[in-house]
Amino acid sequence: MSPKNGTVTDWLARQPGFLSRHLGAREDGSWVDVVRWQSLEQAQAAAQRIMAEIGDCEAMQAIEPASVSMSHAAIALSG
Image (cartoon, rainbow, N blue to C red; front, side):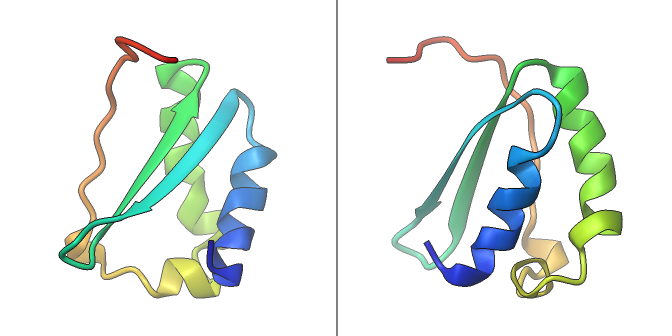
């Protein structure tokens, strides 16, 4: 993981309901960031706060806003 992502991971770890973060690179150079939460409400609350709290960090500034697609899904299988 890039050192600049440490700020994001540290912030996530302090959020209520945070379970885990999995960051993966795709062949086309894009990234998939899967963050697991105890509840949808906790995930949505964190999503509403993240830019105000750490939006100026290097990792967040490196993201092209138009490239972001955020969605939520229930876990069907975990192993």
